[in-house]
Amino acid sequence: MTHPGPEAREPSLGELVGEIGEDLSKLVRQELLLAKAEVREEAAKAGKAAGLLGGAGFAGYMVAVLVTLAVMFGLGNVMDLGWAALIVAVIWAVAGAALYVSGRARLRQVSPTPERTVETLKEDARWARDLTK
Image 1 (tube, one colour):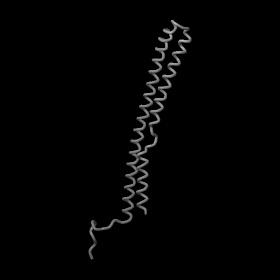
Image 2 (cartoon, rainbow, N blue to C red; image 1 turned 60 degrees about the vertical axis):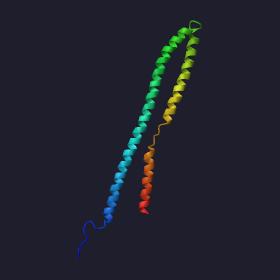
Image 3 (cartoon, rainbow, N blue to C red; image 1 turned 120 degrees about the vertical axis):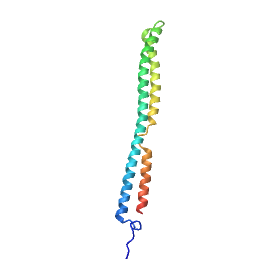
Image 4 (cartoon, one colour; image 1 turned 45 degrees about the vertical axis):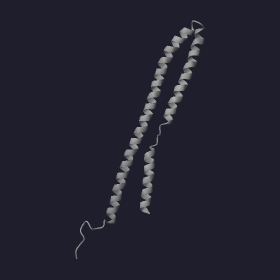
């Protein structure tokens, strides 16, 4: 009686389970890499938005100081200096509100959830359930 060669042998249940374990391990590693990439991408968006808001705040501050002084002293030639300062302050309050609204809109575009990863994990779960049926 001859024994079948290694290429003709059916894999054992243990070998199949081992292969599934290896595949699942590889899949989990790939999902983690995808999640890291997505989080990094969203963090970059948030960083850019924060940088823009910070830059806008600093530039707004510098402009506000210099323009406030120039306009205050200019208006001080035709009215009381206190009223001139109040007028300039109201103008900068409007500008600050516009910058705030713009920055807030950009921050709303940032997604803290790695959505592609969540979707592929759902697909993986469906795949795993189908294997066990």
